[in-house]
Length: 232
Image (cartoon, rainbow, N blue to C red):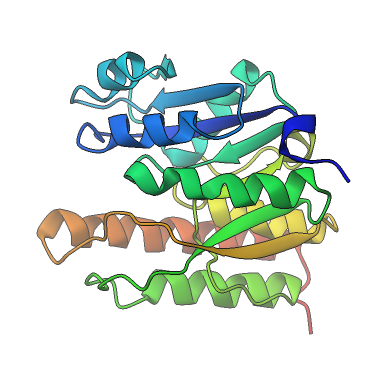
């Protein structure tokens, strides 16, 4: 069985205005058995890019905010490793827990490993509407029910990721990736991890963020549904 040291890996971190957490996230990611830590600055208006660079990451700066999915896909030409670990920029010190995702893929246990947050955090004001929509859509299109359909923490082989392109450029990225992976016959496994991240509250900007996320997820599900017969 192949272990963590047998296959090279890279961490890709899309980031938009994450100056408060990016340093801790990069430093924690650098402790993983990876050969690259790439931060894609998605048009941030703060010091995200400079702080990530000082923390030791390779930084790709986009000219404007293009969306999470677009940021991840922009990093692929930079990736020189066989396995890609996707991680959110707000994980902070808990990012080092994602090594279990690498192990799941590199050992051959699955083709894509998806993190489930084991620690129940105080919920924000989103009421789970977007998660519920994503869960229902994936079940409807693939027959598979997932606990964490929107998790941004995922590991998979670069070849598999490129095979599934193109993918949504926005917050529909994870749902599009999951549906395409399952439809392609890839083995998807959810892995409970002790991760922490920032939860959204009830401020206007938080409500706006959740509204956009709901719209993006709904749009990608409608697009996928147009080309995919529902699973009965």
